[in-house]
Every structure is written in C-alpha cells, then in structure tokens.
Image: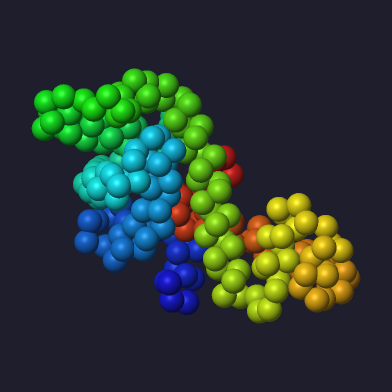
Amino acid sequence: MNIQSHNLLTRISLLKLAQSGKDHPAWEELLGYYEPFIGRILTHMGVARSDVDDVCQLVLMRLWKDLVNYQHEPQRARFRTWLSYLIHSTLVDWHRKRRSDRHTVDSGSIDVEQLLIDRPELELQIEAEWKEHIVDLALERLRTIFSGNAVDVFVRSVEGESATEISQQLNISEESVYVLKHRVKKRLVREAYELRRELEFPDNNSSS
C-alpha cells in the first residue's frame, strides 16, 4: 500500500470504498487483507487444506457480488456477522455440490452442514480470528518500521520469555529489552487501530 492510499484509507474505510463499486481499485487491497483471514476461518471450520483455496475463492466471489448491496446497520448486525453467514452459506453450497458430484460422501469427510449449525459460535470465532488477524497484519507493518531486533523482542516477550532470556539470546541489555518492548507495544496499538479504520466500516471501530 503506498503512502497516498494509506493516508486516504485512514479517513475512509477500505470496505466503504470497495462498496462504492465492483471496479473500484480498493477491491484489490481489500482482497489482499481478507483472503488470508477467510482462509483461516475455513481451516478452523474443518475444510481440508487442499480445498481451502477453492472455497476461499468462492467466498470472495460472493463477497465481490454481494458487498455492494450490503446495508450497513451496526445497531442490528455487524459486518462480520453478515460475513459469517456468507461464509457459512458458501461452504454449505460447496459441500452439497461436491456431495452431489460424487453421489456419495466419503466415510472420512466432515458433515459441514451439521458442523455449522451453531451460527452464534461461528460469529464468535470470526471475531476472535479477526482480532488475531489484525494483530498479525500490524506486526507485519511494524517489521517495516522498526529496525534490528525490536519486533522480535516484543514477540518473544509476549510468548513468555523473560527479559533476561531475551537479553542473553539477542545480545542486548535488559534495559534495551524493556525499552524496545514498550516502543513496539505502543506502536502496535496505533497500527492495529489504523488497520481497523481501514478494514472495517467507520462506525464499527468502537464496538467491534
């Protein structure tokens, strides 16, 4: 993402831009962010790794087709609630077609329709995965912002390593460990906030 588009998207949601028309250039950026996220959800839902890419493309095609008609009413339902239904219905349709094409269901296959009956659980899972996805994206940005071991210090700390261990392994002082950890954490919060502004509808920021 170039600096000009980044400055624009901090003011206008990427989803909002993409919703303005199927040919809007925001679509390419939107898909770049959402495709790996949808893949994570499908994997969690039990889709085999060999099938994830195919099903993900079906979901993205549905998203491309239906987003322009999506009515944003956060007081009734969040965008990702709508997205969870879209993923659910796409996966069920794909599963039915595959079963129809094969005429029988393999004994080891997952009954996706039964697996996905509990939609509230699916919504909660999507929210949890989305938060993790945002953090991952923010960390990717930080690796282009911070030099040296800064991000590695933060990640190691979050994973439970002590300042002493990090200091010894990275050959830096413990004081540097604390300073770098604080700096990266502060910037991570900022980058995560900016990503949410870019990738969610504007008035979702405080509640999602």
